[in-house]
Picture 1: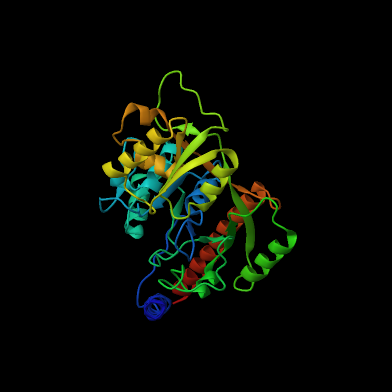
Picture 2: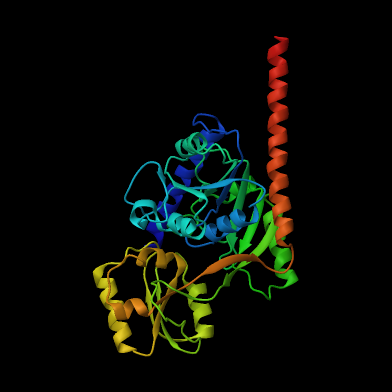
Length: 363
């Protein structure tokens, strides 16, 4: 099987490299836009922290720009352009896009698999927007972003990884040179200066750019369903963990430091909870009557409209998270770096346009 995966990995690499060459040579067309596009992406599969990083950028740049979020809406059953409402069902817009909208209800959030069409329509319908954050768009070469924010998972070093399906890489390592700002995610609070220097050396060997280090901050747990006179469970209580995300290990590890974990129900990323899944969770709750159910923020988006007994609804909680920078550069440094990169690119494009205009005028 490993031999077969190696062959498939080689073929996949060939397809990816050929596609990049076609864009580099201009055979396939890339589009630029008159407003900044900030792309948040990675070169690996699984949960590296793209959505928390997009939310971090959104909250950090508030006051600097009027922003919109554009995502393909992974896992939705609909197609085309869809502006997300807080009343939407995740199957129509995608769980991650709905999660962002629920947290930032005043921000324009759009799901569209054709990013060029999505940007053009946002520009037409929301002229007040002057910056678009493109969530998980690094492989979408049809759009030429102003800034690429590339996320690298500190727990999954890429230097010894392989392309799919042999490894976790979905893009070639050489693409990292297109990054403008790197975010090393899921770092330990006790990350040593030596480890940071090693990461800086690795990333700056492909692109000498700003590198930041971040981790996930767990906030106070929240109920998925609202009931009167409901108390948040004590942290010493028993808990049943339910997860359907790309990399559940940090969620599990954090829960085990605060609760007595009596059961774990681990499902695939973006999993749609079926009636059988809910029966299994309810059976675990009946088996552990002193426990409550704890799930992730993304899973809560998919569970909030599920049909289940009231006893189960009352036991359902989720773990909100937020990205934060670890010891080192502060948020203001990140904001200044990002804004400076955007303004630098805009000045260069303006100079290029003026130069081309002068050449035309002379002719």
